[in-house]
Image (cartoon, rainbow over all chains, first blue to last red; front, side, top):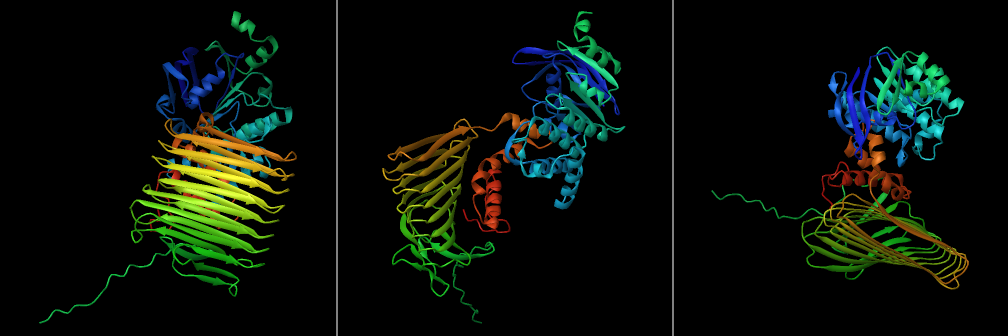
Length: 247
Length: 347
């Protein structure tokens, strides 16, 4: 589904990613761990298409297509989703309007007619239940006045609405209390299917108690320095990153 | 054989709005001349022409307008040269009125219009007035609002400036009776070389009145917006509340905003504030929307509509608000802004 080969990227002349190789297949959950400043968020931003990061070399293929040629909205319509570490507030644009526009743009791309108001409402209610989100959120401005936990729930709600093939969750667990963490993890687990894949970027092992990864990578200084099974997360939790960095 | 001729004189069809909103009563002001007068509720509400140009609206004491009264001002090739006229709105004691004023240009000539709106609210009168300006680039239109409010009266004036070469709204409000309230809201959309000038002079002359002003604009290309707002609180006008805000969204480097907020306060027990800002679209919000599959153009549009919606939502009439929202959206899309299902180019 996703193949990354020798990816180098920089921002403002500073190289952050220094040769990333990664392959994600349908049905897999990958966890990317690493200390602060290792390049985790840069990797997710580059994959989603943020324009201020410049790819200096390397290739990324998504479903056989050159991902780096696609605009952010094209990536999204082709089934990619980025859960933001810091979800953005958009005053004046209601959650309902935002998601309705997003869904209908995707449907237009897939040559499907736009959802009727009733169909949309039904879908929205169903997906809000997945993340135990209150209906009153729908009329409010996107993320405006939401607590940290509510913002992250909103990310998972959006993911549930858009049903992506590949979801990248960037530190979705940061700043979450244990209840919100449980809700977010349950949302991810409900959406897991054999035909889609997840990349979970996280700082701590905590989230991985709820979402069991198939493969764990440790990113350090712009490179993946270790790849192993789920036991690697536990080892990192116990010993920290130093033993990997120094080995 | 003598050919048969049929006499068919060319009588231009009088202008009509083909898509009136539900619950509105329409009147037409052609180049400043009222086409026909109106009398509602046994003459307790009347609209009559001035001798030369302009009209007088008279709402008698205690009368309630059963419908919104819409006055459509048109300029076309029938009225040559610059014109000026004065309209008077007289809202009697404890009356309740709702007005919609539309200003359009029908034919592509250079128009210069100077209109005066004398608005007088007697004690306890309530009036809601929406002015929609949609004129072409060769039009220059100055509107002088002269507003006087008596005790306990309440006025809400919303100005939606969609299009026009040079639009000037000069608003002078005198709060002459205590406990009156005045709300002024404006949204302006300018592009190309368009200029919009808004000048507000809010005089709080007596105690206990409230005024709120919110003006928001979006500027593209080489357009200009000028905003000069003054709140004047007289020495005796204690317990005054007066607020003013002017916010601008600039879409190009060459668009310019000149904002001049002023406060002149001579009383010592008042709540007053003013604020003026200019900014651009939020890059992070655009990326966020794009990452959900919304194309860049649509994401920009959503942000712009959200920006001016603060003003539109002040309009209480839902039908009118929705109609104006559609007009704003098509204007921001760069399409010609006209009402849905109407082929007339009222601009």
